[in-house]
Picture 1 (cartoon, helix red, strand yellow):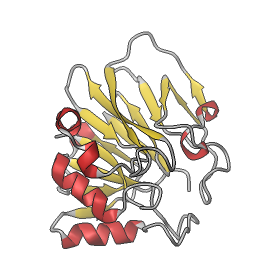
Picture 2 (cartoon, rainbow, N blue to C red):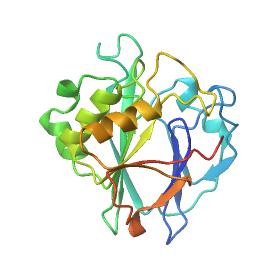
Picture 3 (cartoon, rainbow, N blue to C red):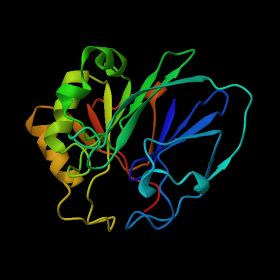
Length: 220
């Protein structure tokens, strides 16, 4: 399973053997300050919700293939702690490789309280992922402390943070936690957190020796 970070909350998941690919949460052109427009292809597009910064399906050129090596399931949650009253629903996608068993969880813009989200029937689906793509900016999603609690309670092997503030990228919303704030908080909790120089990771060759890897967004 190859994972490429396009930017914001958008990732491309690709099977190295068949070339089958899935793009999750593409943003519409101009919807995310500091990021270039998306120019990419995929066999399938998934969206956690219909806000412009997660629902730019028209930005992805579809290249259909007959059979997907991935099983896609989901947990329906909320974009806010008020059961969607503030920002609506959020769908957490779970992508599992049918042959290798690799599991990736993309949390979208989850903002639901963790006690509500991690009830038993959901926890069994979310727990022990090989890769978890976790929002950490707060306000619109979990903040850095809630994201770290989610990680502690679901025990993924590797976490890739998303949906954060970055002055360097030009996505400089002062009310949102920065990636540096999240990484510092992770280190304080004793987690190994690395900043990558590339936009992708190959889970089949993951010898990174870290718990959290901040990938460099492709579209900067």
